[in-house]
Figure 1 (cartoon, rainbow, N blue to C red):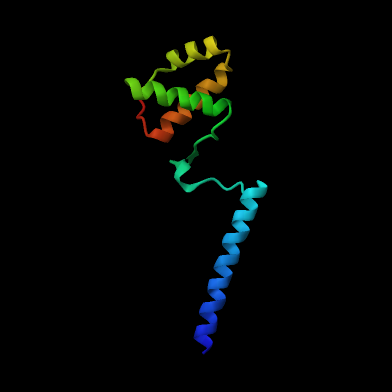
Figure 2: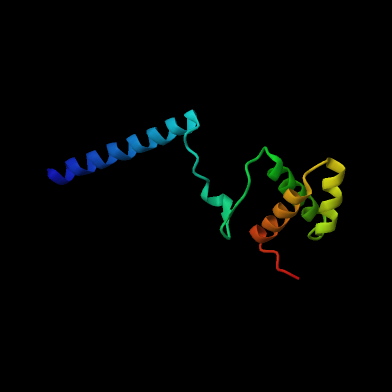
Amino acid sequence: MATQQNEVMARALRNLERAMADLNQLRGLDKSPEPSKWKRDIYRPKRHGKCATVWNTLDKLSAKSKVPTLQEMREIARKNNWNENNTRIEYYRWRNYHGVPKR
C-alpha cells in the first residue's frame, strides 16, 4: 500500500515539475540553455543577435565550401558595419564549437 502511494506521489511531483517548467518558460524565467546547444564548453548564441548573425554567416559560408578565413570574415564585417573585434572573437568561438583544428 505504501509503495503504491509513493508511486502516485512521485508521478504527481513529476507532473508538477513539468507544469512549473512550462510556466517559467512562458514567463521567460527559464534561462537555462538547451543541452544540444553546448559543445566543447561553448554555448551557441541565441537566434537573433549580433553574435548569432556572425555565426549564421559562418555556417552559410562553411556549407558552401571550406571553412572561411578570418580575413574573409573581416571583409564581411566591414561591408556590414559589424564590430570587427566581436567578429574575430565569434569566429574563433565558432571554430572551437565546431571542432575546426588550429592550423
